[in-house]
Length: 318
Image (tube, rainbow, N blue to C red; front, side, top):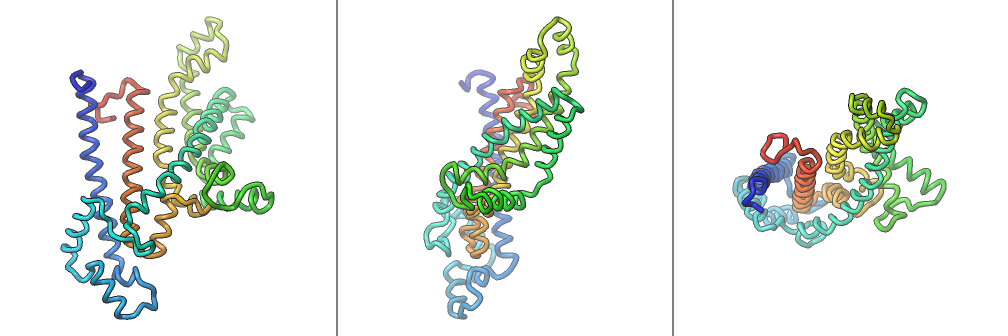
């Protein structure tokens, strides 16, 4: 495959993205390392407020916090290269396996959210474009704008109060099947629904006003064929682009939503490890989240080139 011009371009692109990803990952880890030691004495942060002086000194010696900072960084960076982020102070086991064990739950939530958000948003945007400036368009536009401007933690609490506390239809929190997935996925889907719907509406309106659609109408083709057979096909490119960006950014919103619903994902683990002042687990969790975001962004970039042939692996746009 690599002998063809396209195969060479793909290989060169993947090598460039791999180098870029390694640099980004190193920058994130260095930032977390400096932040963990710059905001205060890490040994005091990791211990309970009533810890004794002996416990404090033992913790500093155990984690090497009494060494110079450059020695600490060299030792920590060497551990990163071997996948060793140290032992979790909270769980007393290696930190990286603990962080990796939460990935399936977060991917479960992200997939459920994407399955709700993307079809709903495309439907809202398309219907709004078919009936511009109508009552339907105005109502759907208000819904999409509400999705963009609504805070996820507030929406999550309101859904819990309505569907779990008042109606008793769904559990208030926890990780499990459909009954546990529905409320957090709806909460996380609200914002991407608003953003993708706005892009879908604009793209459809733009395509439906172009000469090729007018010509199709003048030839006697039905409005359904003009809309879905011609306009929607070309409008799909910005819609797919926006959908990919929103899917990759779901991990950011998952940190809040997982905490609100007690979802056993990596976002809630990050908040728990910060609250428990578990520095090794914080570093391992941030590392895994960064890897997931980088992988999703790479997947989205490759998808762009499949959807829009004008984008090539060798261009800066890709």
